[in-house]
Structures are given as C-alpha cells and as structure tokens.
Image 1 (cartoon, rainbow, N blue to C red):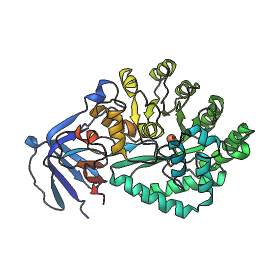
Image 2 (cartoon, rainbow, N blue to C red; image 1 turned 180 degrees about the vertical axis):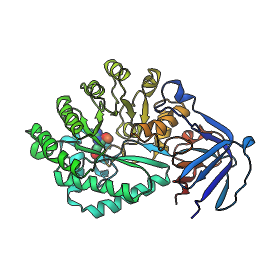
Image 3 (cartoon, helix red, strand yellow; image 1 turned 30 degrees about the vertical axis):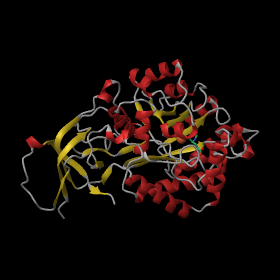
Image 4 (cartoon, protein in one colour; image 1 turned 45 degrees about the vertical axis):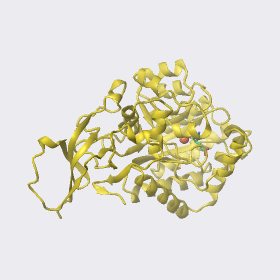
Length: 418
Ligand code: NIG
Ligand code: FE
C-alpha cells in the first residue's frame, strides 16, 4: 500500500529545520536556532521527507494519498523530548502538598516516611496491569501536550519484584505507545525503612539481585541513583554506576538537588550521559562538566513546585556546557509532565531566551536520551514528530502566554495524534 503523504504549507516559522544539526547544541548555537520563515514541510509515512521555503516549493505533482494542511500564521517545531520522568506511579501525593503549604519541607516529609517511601508502598500494592493502564492514560495526555519522546525511571518499587514490575510497565508502554521511550533503573532512589540502619546492604541488594534481573529481562537502557544527603552518598552512587556499567547501562544521575556532595565530578569522571537537577551548582561542578561529555539537565517544574532555586541554565550555556531541560514528572516533587509549562519556566525563571529553551527541550533533550538521530529536529529522515501551534505572532508567544494551550495539532510518526 502506498504511504500516506502530508504536505504542510505556508508555515509562518519552521523551527529546528536542519539536516546536519549537531546535537547537543551549546552556547550561542542554542540562541541561533535554525529556522525558516514562510516554509513548507513534507511527510511521507512516518518520517520527514522534505522542507524548504515556499518560494522554492515545486508544487504538487502527485496527489495520491496526499493530505494538505494550510498552516497560515502557525509555527511548527519538533515535539518535546522529555529526558527525565518518573511517570509510572501508583498514587498522587496531595496530602504532602498540603503539609508543605503548612510549612514542612520536602526533606522533613521524607524523614517522616512520606515522599518516595509513600509512593513505594502504594506501588508495591498495585498490580502491573492497573499500573500500566494508568500510566498509559497519563502518557496519552502528555503526547497531546506535545511530548514526542520520553524517558521513564523506576524507583518507586524499592524491592526486586516491585522494581521489575515498574520497568515491565515502562517496557509495555514502549511497545504499545507510538513515541520513542527509554527506560532507566532507579533502584537507588531511596533507602527502604528495613535498611535504614544498613544502607550499604540495600546497595548490595540493588547490585547483586535487582540489577542482574533487570539486565536479564533487558528492562533498562540506563542506571540512575539519587545522590543526596539522606539518600545515597557519592561512594554508594559510584558503586551503582560501576555495577550498571558491567551490564552496559550508562548513567543518568540525580545530583545536587539540595546539596553538592561531589556527585557531579564523579559522574563526569565516569562518563555519565547526564547529571540531572543541579539546583545547586558549584564552580567545581562547572569545571568538571566543562571537561566532560556529560550533559546537564535542568528540571524547573521541580524547582517551581518545591520552591527551590532554579538550575543556573544561563551560566551553563555561557560555559558551553550542553543543557537539556526536562519535566521530572513524578507525584512528589513535580506532579506535572506538561512541557509547555516547562518551556515557560525555562524562560521566566531560568531566564533563557525562547530559542535557547526550545533547543534544551527538543534536540538537547533527545541527546540526553541518545535519541537525537531519530527525533528532536526537523530533518529529512527523522520521525515526523512535531507540534503545529495555533496562529501566533512569534515563537516567544508560546512561553510568554504561560498556562494557555497554544497547540493546534501534534504529529507523531507522520499522523495527527488525537
Ligand atoms: O527527581 N529527587 C528525587 N526524585 C524525584 C522525586 C521523587 C518523589 O518525591 O517521589 C525528583 O524530584
Ligand atoms: Fe527525578
């Protein structure tokens, strides 16, 4: 059967239109994103086959199976590539939200057995199919909000069985949902209560029992740990990273959310794919990142929700350190996976220019999950995953009008996602 074709014409601005985009974009390349004004975009089957200026468009020679969309006054850019989420979970945690409004901190709530441990208890009790159906609905909503590639972590299991259950759910999403999904094993998310007095024994369990089982079933692409006071030390994180490497799992690590404990240097030395959070960023961390291939990932919705400092994205960009920005969607610190809001926060709170933020949310996000050959830009041969905005004046209007839905259509694999 002939493949369906879509031609979108009169596009006001087509962003990240580039054949040879060098991911990740760094420094001034983020601000100067490639784009075309008054452009067309051609799709065949599930991928992009061409684009260019309307004045260079050769007209239509083959009308078979062709859908034409007039995008007058509309902008097109790649779907968001969300490289950091915990979007498989069993319970919402609005009680803790109220406790924080009353004055307790995220750390205090965690010390009382709330936080990640609260979610772990709920997840251990929920069956795999229910978890899957709930996560599927969540992901369906995210795709409609423009997310076209995503990473999903475990870490609400904290027992071998529950961690495997979570990762199987993520793997099933990978099979049944139309967007690229990467999975990350985060057994080292919190110390379960029964290991409170012997945290190293829990690290042993992760390394000697959970990890081999995860690898055996090929459930994860990456390994993660929460390197933080009250969670995992830099030494324990190092053991987890090294163990993951033995199974071919590269590291993407939670570091510097509340404290700098040497985690960034460690991750850079170990060749981690990314270090995520970085609300705290020291000169030493910057120096380590500059001398490495490790990407920095900012999570501004988490800072917004917990009232923390924002990752110093401007500093990272000025130092030519590759920066991606992701949602951190999870029921505790970031109960939203809406990347449109993340786009606004990247501009309003991290003070990035709209083009810098867009680079961080698309091509750099793709790179932070090694999907930059498939998604993240408008390039011939890449997946036809893109957002068509409603008629707007310019790109800046999208992050500026925070909370407004500016999306007209989301295309995934060459088809409108409904
Ligand atoms: O990235 N910081 C650690 N993990 C998550 C929060 C998890 C939770 O509170 O459930 C985060 O913010
Ligand atoms: Fe996280």
